Structure formats: C-alpha cells, structure tokens
Amino acid sequence: MIEVKIKAILDVARLLGSREQTLTLPGGATVLGALQKLAEIHGEPLAERIFAGQDKLRDGLVVMVNGRNICFLDHLHTVLTDGDEVLLFPPAGGG
Image 1 (tube, helix red, strand yellow):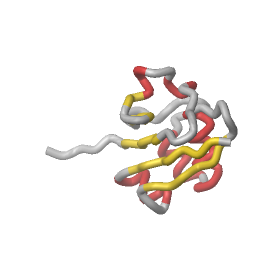
Image 2 (cartoon, helix red, strand yellow):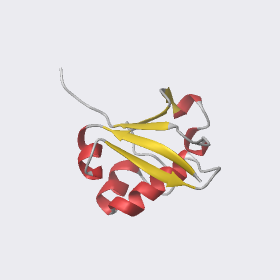
Image 3 (cartoon, one colour):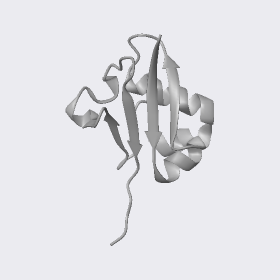
Image 4 (cartoon, helix red, strand yellow):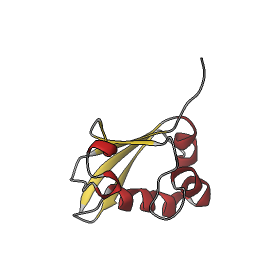
C-alpha cells in the first residue's frame, strides 16, 4: 500500500471538503485510480468536476504529480509511489 497526498484549490477543494487529504492506494496505483477513488469517496459532484467521460479529464483541469503536469508524464496512467503529491488545479478566469 502507498499513501499519496491530494491537494486541491478553488471549487475542487470545496467538493473535497478540504484543500488537502491523504489517500491510501494499492502499490502500482495510477493517477486515474487515485482520481476514481476520490470520486468514489466524494460522490458524483466531484466526479463530474474531474471527468468528462470514462477515463477522460474535464477540459482545463490540470493534474500535477510532484510539481510536474501529467501531460509530460504518462497522463492518467502515471504510476504513483509512496509519498507523491497530486495537485488538482481547475481552470480559473479573471483579468
């Protein structure tokens, strides 16, 4: 088993009920598995905010592992290790 820290801001943090939480996952878990577990724990509103269909992230949502965007890693199939930090960064507007 591994423990990963999930950090979120803005509306994603509100849906999680906090800006930070720890997930316990099986060894070899991926970003997708972590996000699916979060959706399972926190329900449909979070799932709809994260996913735009099965195994597809909602447009604009940035997911980072240890400060690196998963787009530059193995996307949703990025394997997590014990102690990793996953940041969920929704799009923000303003000017």
